[in-house]
Length: 416
Image (cartoon, rainbow, N blue to C red; front, side, top):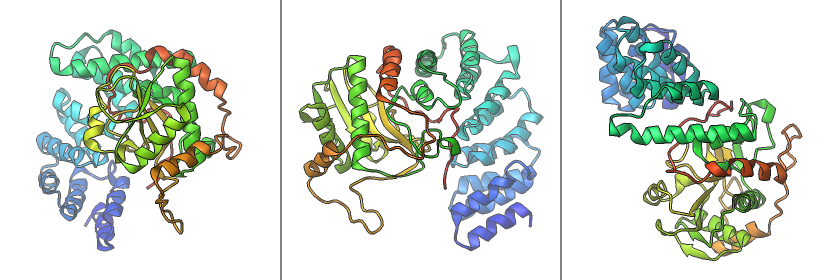
């Protein structure tokens, strides 16, 4: 039994399937393709992933067969364990270096792991031999997500409009991202610490607040675990109001999504903005749609938010940067990984079951003064946000609200 397989079996024996996945990470690019495939098969059998188990079984028997390695890598990507796909796909590409299919799948596996620097380097190494679609498109995307705006813009100049209509949406999305990145660079440094700039460039959202904790300890403005508060929700809404005023947006209503958390946030937004509330209607113009966490909102309604109505502004209080929502909000109050709402049960604290209007009133009445934090986060006063919004407003609220899979080049510590 190989070390990789032994580590997987040990975790599975303890009933820890997630631990078995983690146990394979140290072996993902050090074990031989055959040994990795054998260990992955054990994991796939335990998880009930018959397609991955079969592909791994075949790859273990044929570790020099490019097709077997491709099928193994493809199944890993499809099952959400892309880190296991990288090594077998690299081996397959070394055997068949001119295979566009293998190259594309390896790039997909690296992208899933947010390894954009490696993906861009792999594509750039092809030089003039790199086809336009989708390879050069992927080069632009990964170069941008890696934080190299100049390199992405230079590659984009060489990218013609796609002849295949299926790529038109992706081309338009990429052009919007590059346009926003250009505005963000004019408004700020757009470097490896410019969280607000990269969040805007990649998602189109204005980031209202930065976490005042752990900035120089790996968080760079994001929250890890957040015990949310009425005051923080209120501060996020104040920042939304500031952005709307600076950008010249004048909504006439606040649209309420049906979930309790969304209704509380919507009612609080109406109180802060001084606007009446109305039921959510996808066709309603000039309205603020408020969601506490889009991932927890009604999926069918969230899908309708991808297409923007004139004057509609989507505000999400907390945006999960490790598991982004299916559509990108126009305004994110904060970025976090895990959070507990102020009105949710937590530890010995029971859930606040009062009427939504009463909870929302607590938000409106809360003190929006910023948390001083640990004293090591750069200051982010209202005036700084006002100046930033004024600079990027021409690129705000444009195009579809796309799903943003990458957190971008600003580092952030993940937990779990």
